[in-house]
Structures are given as C-alpha cells and as structure tokens.
Amino acid sequence: MTEALFFLNCYITEFKATGTKITDDKFVVLDRTAFYPESGGQPSDTGKLIRKSDSAEFEVLYVGKFNGYISHEIVSPNGNVSTGLKAGIM
Image 1: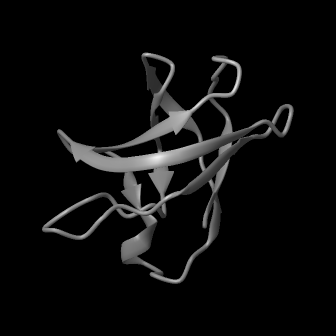
Image 2 (image 1 turned 120 degrees about the vertical axis):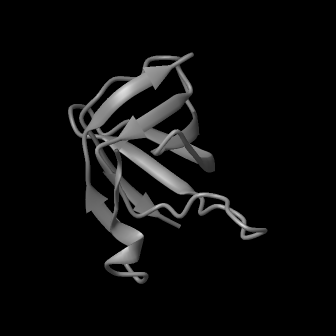
C-alpha cells in the first residue's frame, strides 16, 4: 500500500519517497505520495518526480489508485527510470 501523505497535509508540495514498482517505463508506484489520485470526479494532481542519483526530472501526467496502490504516470525523457525518486507537486 502507498502511504497517502495528502491525507496528513493537503498543502504539502515536496516529499521524499522510494519507487517500489515500475511498469512499462512510465507507471511508477511509490512507497508514499502527496499526489492526489483521480477520484470521484476530482482530477489528479500533476507535478514532477526527481531521481536523486542524477537529478533527472520526470513529469507526472496522471495519478490513479489501483488495487490499493497509487500509480503515477510519468514522461521519461530518455526512457530510463529507476527507483529512489523524490517528488514535488506543481
């Protein structure tokens, strides 16, 4: 399960998280997130994920909740995604 930081602080704009699962080089599940997923007609948050190792930025296009996990759809500029991401909401 993804820890939903937005329930603890709806004004949070930056947080640290670790990627736990990556699918198709564009869907990232984090251990914790402040990105609100699309739900009940409310659109999802957008923003960016930043890889700690090299500061590469990945735009977050969509966030959804699937089977208890919050998944972030990202744009990878070079197709190379890894775990160890920190994040911020725009």
